[in-house]
Image (tube, rainbow, N blue to C red; front, side, top):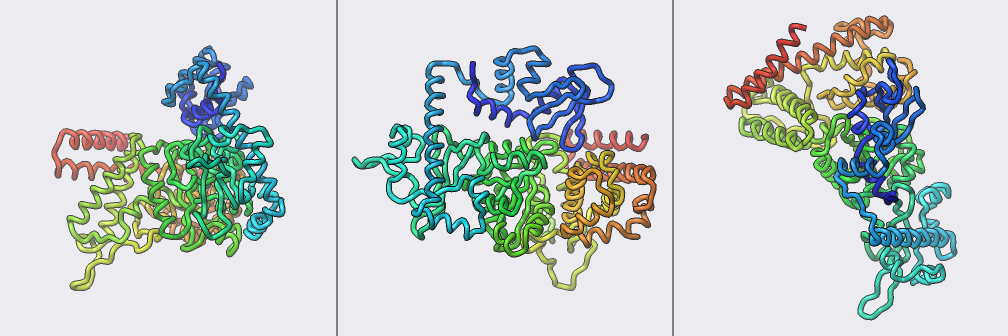
Length: 599
């Protein structure tokens, strides 16, 4: 049976290669890939790699290479049909039936695809016609080159019914043109007519680069600014992101994909050489779109305009993503200056400014924390109790147990740190009759939290920066941490990302790159006597072996302190709410702590 390519692509999107392979091969993460012993040969040193972003496995010892379907066929000797059925079930999809009706549907889908392709070519031609001159000049005035116009297949939909006449000459049946919604059906006895008129056209392509729908920007002042194709058998807007086929290779190679707000944001970034950007289609990100993005990169960067609408979009994306989080899979957020979109920033400050904003993107956990505390006071027991409950409820939205546990720990640390730093019940004093100020006025401002482990966090990060060759030894552990200081956490992520892309980089090169991203003040505090007085092994001139041992010891102290804090909190929970559940948590954590002390 021949399965529709889109059906197989959907399975590949929903089921990572590592999840299939790990059922029979013990995998360890190494950078952007997983490694393990080959299932095809007997070996003692791992030569088998899995790359979820690129969707394949490769065995260097045997030369075997393939995707999730070929892995099952090779390792379990199952036919292709059975492999598809098994993986479809895992993906929660129903296998299409090989019926005459299904065959007719597939044939009609191909016919619809041909109609959209013919339409796309027509719009491209019209952009170069005398009638399309205004649209072409608009694009050129926006700074777009002919190469970018060609890459994204931009076009022009003329006034009148020029497309309808063209489709007729190309022998496209009218019912097909209407079903693909390049023509609108006539009403009240009128004939069909062109759906798009006098608009700059942006083809929307599927993951294989085939146009399936369009977005059109009006050139006149009347009508909606942007108009998208309605949904059709080819086009389901919740399962596609604009620009995916153009961004796919670069995004996969760099394990980084950027999500902008609209068509022109994507194209402006591409014009500046940032060609790994996509955009949702006028709505909040859907679960399908997030799964598609995760197939390319573990932490897509959402880049929003620096206005209230952009901040609201960031929060909607955070809410949608929280229940879906998995180990190693999250989102990051690049917040632009107020009143600017990517095109504005690039034109005013250049590509490097835009790149710096992206590299300094903050993690999802920071976004949700800032929303919890923004504009609020925590000067009464009731207000503090409300924050504790909201933080716990937020962590409870996450379905995956280990990620939920990490969020609960992080939120507890943040809440306790905030209460220590705020007035009223804490150590700080305010003048008589003065109430403490609410936390953080603007969504993008940093919160004043200082984690108890802040010195050790600085030691861990500073040691890596002065000894970049530690990357392989510390990447997984440092990558799994989250620092309460949001700027320090952004620096941690930027350092890990740049080192993974340039593994042979030395201290000076890494320091220069991080400074260019705006981390000058943070670097001064890390590469200083303030850190060296606690950890001589963090000095650039220290031996690598000393740096390695010192880093490991500092990391173990961080883990121990985290565990002790969890034990204290569990004890408080048990006293405040003495149930079997709270006692079981306390006993489990105390046992873990005793085992850690014995080691």
